[in-house]
Length: 206
Image (tube, rainbow, N blue to C red; front, side, top):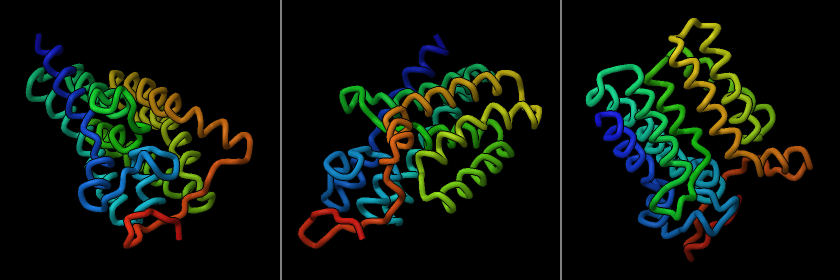
């Protein structure tokens, strides 16, 4: 019963569409109508600019942190923490509030990993940032970083349960990036480019 409570509660927390809420409430912009039509931080950056994207990324990461904390305080075991983390990522990727649509799970997954293994988080985030800096492809950086999570956990001797979670989390992120993978292979993927919201309420790139 405790695990059921953890998975349901963490899924509902993960389902909160932070990007949609921030875009509509503070900028009168529905991120689903612009750019990649995704509610994550990358599309927020392209559509609204770096500061709104930062808040979308942070609040999405907090969902992952909350999922792990729920597992910790309700279940009190590593398995319960992992259950909460997976629930939060699943809620973000397939939100019940958005017709089971959602984001890519990168920020929420990072929040989960930050709670489980801070060292892995630092390594993976550094690799992600380097790839973004040199290629300007956030999707490519996210896919590679996700794939390296279980590898880094293995190299740093993380707990076996966390290693298996890393595999599951990586699969979540990579599967959600299938359209991006196709565009990368076709050479049509968009590079990161900040945008801004105009006075008329239209979001345009700059």
